[in-house]
Image (cartoon, rainbow, N blue to C red; front, side, top):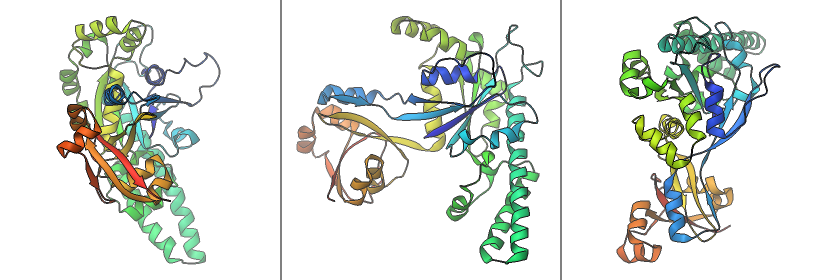
Length: 358
């Protein structure tokens, strides 16, 4: 999974990126450039399985994050033109909610809902320019050859243009699978699912849920393809310097049930409809990311295309059943270890061994 991190200048997006990926701060001075890093998806189930199987290796699922330069009003087209954002599955918009005298807001005041709407409009206007350019080319092609494929694509892009002119993001436009496939080659960012990450101050994070409601972000994020969560990136940066015990005490003092970074990754998973299945053995215990509702044979391809091609069956047990029983042999005796065919819908937390032949 690849996710682009967007935001205004001084919103804290680069701080969040560095915390998520462990990447060092960018060198000061010079022209800002897109940066890439990888975050491990927190999953205590992997470590619990490792206690049962004592493997040589433990591997968490990962998310690739792309941190792009800050955006100002009128600069949305620069995002569309960034090669680093092509092919992203989702966007994270870091919305500033904290006050700071040393780093004033570029617009002179802090208003999270205003900023969320502003960036959305920037993406819409940038996509509109892309769609209009494509329509011009299609009109020219149709005058020359009048191919049915171009006529069909023109109708699709005219629908997109209507939505964008009405200031509706493309994620709100209903598209068929074929139409989604046609649009994959275009960097239409308003069509991507987007997680709004409110970057709060210390006092605000103590009442994050109430703040999200008061700010209007919670209501705004109820639109299709949007999600919202709250973090306090400066506080998370402080906790990163502490021992695990001290960080946990600090977190409890703030009333936080989990690290903010875990919340961002989990919220991104929920927005995209992602789940994890697990594999376990003496060599490795590992989590694998798939979309909810993925069939067993396709899930096998996440590990290796040969396993998908030669799929025979899947040996499946729920994580909770395996931990309760203590071993696969005990699960077999209890009847919780079962065989499933290629069309089985893999569930979050399934521990699977794929049988295949190539």
